[in-house]
Image (cartoon, rainbow, N blue to C red):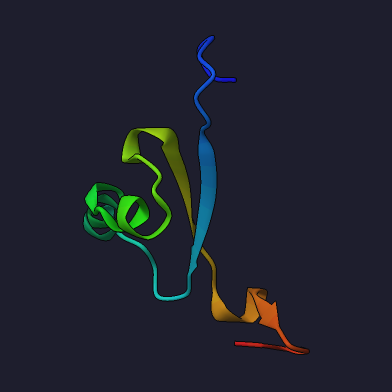
Length: 64
């Protein structure tokens, strides 16, 4: 429940190795991709952007 309304809110995270700058994060937030692909209104979705150096992020037994 958010703001005493029974409307779902969603939270997502994005991890980038090259860095997410303000312009790119703004484009992602303003895009309709969330609404088109998973029917979530952009006013109900919260995204946190992470910038991570390649050696600090691992997948499948190794780092990038």
